[in-house]
Amino acid sequence: MSQVRKEPAYISGQQRNAPTNAEMVFELIRPAPLTEQKRSRDGCIYLYRAMKFIGWLPPKQGVLRYVYLTWTLMTFVWCTTYLPLGFLGSYMTQIKSFSPGEFLTSLQVCINAYGSSVKVAITYSMLWRLIKAKNILDQLDLRCTAMEEREKIHLVVARSNHAFLIFTFVYCGYAGSTYLSSVLSGRPPWQLYNPFIDWHDGTLKLWVASTLEYMVMSGAVLQDQLSDTYPLIYTLILRAHLDMLRERIRRLRSDENLSEAESYEELVKCVMDHKLILRYCAIIKPVISGTIFTQFLLIGLVLGLTLINVFFFSDIWTGIASFMFVITILLQTFPFCYTCNLIMEDCESLTHAIFQSNWVDASRRYKTTLLYFLQNVQQPIVFIAGGIFQISMSSNISVAKFAFSVITITKQMNIADKFKTD
Image (cartoon, rainbow, N blue to C red; front, side, top):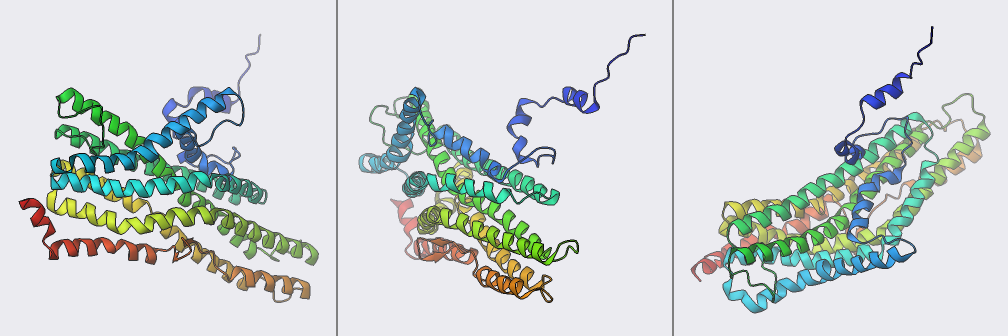
């Protein structure tokens, strides 16, 4: 009798359950099995795919590099330069045709567009820092050999890509809702200056002008999203490595099979891990400082104008679009500021882990090195915005409070009523 060859179960299972296209696109938002090898830099995959799409990562050589740089130039001309100037041009040429609600809807986005252009310029000019930081993550990953450490890397990779996907849905939701609500109400979504198409001349030109605005705004929204998400993604990965370092410190001198010299080597490795983490932070801090400082300067004013528009002038459709815009503005700083608070707590936990480690009966050399390590760890990792504000939840709330000051001034001066009567 001829023998029938039986394939292993895992092969036949893979053939039966071939992933669909949607599953392949969203596979990174779920932790990969430990049979796969994931690196910390994989948490930036969605982020860098978007950068490549918008024109930030050209090929290193060849004809395609120059074709790609043409696309890069186009995105910066239209999304970074034309968009803020388009708002200014519309105010100079057709300010009298704006209703109060339309003007506030345009103004709130206009101010944010100028801030976004500054953030994009800072991020793009310092993109080399973010790329270099990924190389340091590769060095940190070399120490992640234990199964539980690899599991933590897989979790933070999924969490980072999931966060980027959530930002994408919210940002695209704002652009799409504003586009549809405005066109269905009979006006362009942002009324950018367009000398070639007069949207008043019929429904077709309204849709054409609105669609062109939507395309420009979509590119600007993606650029803004990149500037807003990289701080969160890079600090989420930072927290994962701080957590793994804390666990390594707790295990120091707990293995009875290790000699005193081997335990000392493990301590030295922990010190080197902490130095790598500090190098990682030093590389990304200048980029984060500029982008978050710009956002801190604008968040209160933009939120205030948006809430005034919602409370006094908006209809149901404008209200939905403004609500999505408020969520977008809050996402630009609050998640990252909260993560900064958690990083400071993580640094404090490192100090506690050193105190609670098994060092009492260690050698003099071990205790001396441990004391040096403790002195360095006691200095928390703090991010500063523009060299002025410490980035934390308290500073974020302080600058966001300005929104209520804007609303209070509007009420006391009856500005809303004057707009309505005029």
